[in-house]
Length: 426
Image (cartoon, rainbow, N blue to C red; front, side, top):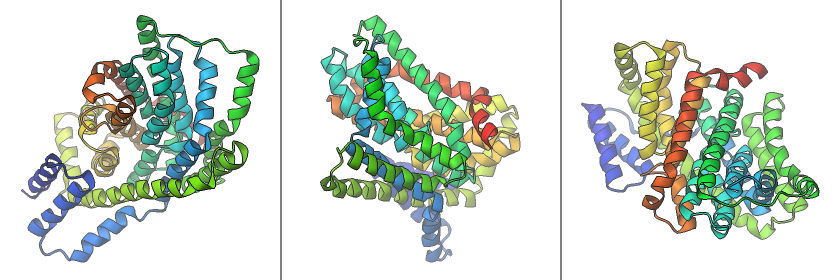
């Protein structure tokens, strides 16, 4: 009965428009008062503290800071310029530039929202000016933002590693091939639509312009290689990699590109602090909510229920994927990972599925929810930039959604696409 009370309170709070973190906290608190009234209040504080008390989580503010410094320091524009010269001459070039730019940016910020805001603010106006429909521009920008949490570094991968007790370095590597596959799938969709709509292609740049663009943007391109190389080589931990990325972004933005100003730092630090505080508060309350689920033995109940239906890995992964796709549409990705990772891990280990493989499946699956209504935080941002309602772009989003789901099922049933690089380097 207690677990029904917990979920009923949670969904009522969501329907009332209470922010997700407070909905989780309020439902957990009332549950503990009603169902476990003998529990000392200190236990609640302890669980909240333990949820956020993890050294690897320190990587999150550093990667957020690195993304902000990149944006203010002109690194994001340099990456877009490189993408423009590399693929802009293809039919629908600016749409493909949008996706390639997201792939480059993803290798530094680790955040889909940062990716959407940075790339969208640069390219949505440019695409509109060149004759692209605003709805299509929004769809491209929103869907390509999913790459931000797949290609390393990735803030959600850090969370999965901490919660599931997995190697963050292996998770980073495991996301590389799926992230590239996702990028190519979205580019194919963009090209086909652009060809049908006769969207323009840019002029073929001269070799000299390409060399100059790459030369100017090489400092931005080095960062992902530096982060991954440092982690794989054992030079620094993922947390230290975040600090290195932030310092590197500052040095390049301030001393090399000279776009970053000291006057920008208060705003950058304020945004970093507020974003980090929001994430860590959500991590803490979601951890308490997840602990209650463990107390109620929900992971074991789910595992037994699924195993009673079938022990076939293919069918169970299909059921989990369908469930996660629905959850991603209505629940924040961070909270979903914190609550659902410990719920599914016992089942995954029982079936002999590689936890690293499953971690990437979860992140990619829930990342699709970032651009699907009603939550779709990465859909809201470009809609605001293009001054369009979410309902206006649903038709344009659909082909990109299908492409993402196809890639999801490819990596689900071809695990070598995920595990090849971790097995190679570890």
